Amino acid sequence: KAGVTQTPRYLIKTRGQQVTLSCSPISGHRSVSWYQQTPGQGLQFLFEYFSETQRNKGNFPGRFSGRQFSNSRSEMNVSTLELGDSALYLCASSFSDSSYNSPLHFGNGTRLTVT
Amino acid sequence: DQQVKQNSPSLSVQEGRISILNCDYTNSMFDYFLWYKKYPAEGPTFLISISSIKDKNEDGRFTVFLNKSAKHLSLHIVPSQPGDSAVYFCAAREETSGSRLTFGEGTQLTVNP
Image (cartoon, rainbow over all chains, first blue to last red):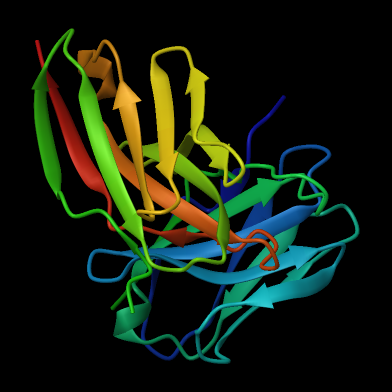
């Protein structure tokens, strides 16, 4: 079974621009979550999508948004980029039936650098 | 407010010995706990998990122990191998929070040959 696939692996953008990151979950997984990893803040939850609906949202400004498509693929968008948005953005998928615990499986991330 | 804490930034052990990584949490609503391993330039890899209704879960060389009264969990790796050298993250989830995980800061494990 293919793992979680994130594209692109690396991105360099200029402050003020916007960026879209893509994630394909493991086949059969309906939940997709996004996390930001920075040296200072560690791994922080951005949002989760399940069946094309945002189910949970972390404490990030509205410049960070996402969506999920009917095939469970997901995209996240960051508008008006700031230098502090430079980070590794990780996507994770899970089966996420609420009746039992299922672990999250992560992709290798997109390394975003804002200059 | 750091709800999940890994107090040891680093740990060094000899090959073949036991590695014990520790994690403390403050949120009593956490009901599911996971350990992940992360190599540089890769995403975290799921290792093992435990539900709050259990106090121990084992998978090969990896065992996770949960002490709910102390709000403490630990990951034991026996025997440790050089390939285990990585950053280990503890994570926790609240029952009503879907797939939202709260992560600790990570512990860098180095296994020396």
